[in-house]
Length: 494
Image (cartoon, rainbow, N blue to C red):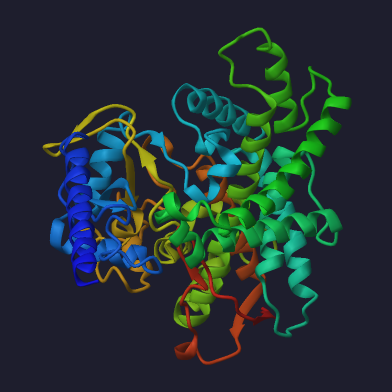
């Protein structure tokens, strides 16, 4: 028995050493990656990265290895970029090389490299060019979409008035109001907040967003090579997104039955028309799968980011009542109470503009962005990153870069004001990411945030249920995306 045990122990040690040696040879053949902690076979940097605190773990590694380093999520090498300089150098100075997209494993089963957000290469170029054109044609950044947002803001005001100064949770109402703007572009109409189909879709969207941001999803995204064989968050996310995709497919079929090629009503019509134009082009990416998944990402992205920012913004304005008071004062001076806000007011309201920027900076909704991928072997800061390597530009480290912001972890609208109280830009303001993969809907989101915030604060004072010092801004979930805390508050007519 003793001899048998010794032989077993020897074999375990021998095989482990063999695996480690083989693993190191495999790594060295992949290029000259930036330095980082030594990975273990199969589990990578399990010892250095806490699956429940990925962002914190990466920022801690930055202190040891600098702004550019490599970690291993299981067997996958990930190049991590931290701080304004490193992220700018990659996403802007070497924009083409870093323009690829790697899909989060939790979402891979749904997208498989399709749709405008999770595609790469020629497919992505075709879909992005087309999507930007259609969004602009339907008014993104123009007067027509401004009027649509103003109209929806009035519906939102009515919902707030119905609360009659009693406590309520704003999450669902804000999601509906924001979603209706992108719905008017993608589907050609808004929905009543009581519409059962709309409520069901919104619930699926909110649930999938929470699930994607959960600790379980973070664990799966790191150790997918092992966990893909077991039930997990990937199944729930797939089912939830599948429900939304099924609704989109139903709307596509309805549009097909009533399509008038010379009079497109919405994004779906425009895509169907393009599909017909390119039906004989074998390299065309205009097909039903890309239509459904592009519409899904536009619908999803056009809802969750802005509504989450509004929720965080209201909470921060209650935590800092002196900021809310100054916003009210500026609204009264520039707009008054006798007309609705418009986008031209923004240039005359530097404090409101600064507050919205600071809300976006502090809320930090996508701390690690969506993962990028290098499109070819790329030389970067003396290292060689092989084609296909995943890259994580840590946007949180840019938004909190101490070289770009004073007291970066404090809420301070002064970060975006000069000594004369005029609005000032900051190159480290990257909540929409930067470079070729910058958010498609940035112009729309910026317009929505200004008009929704200003319209609500023109009519109401936000009242918390606890004293400001007891307001907790800790996220409900903090994974690939940040979920704002759920709270109740009161709106008091001004």
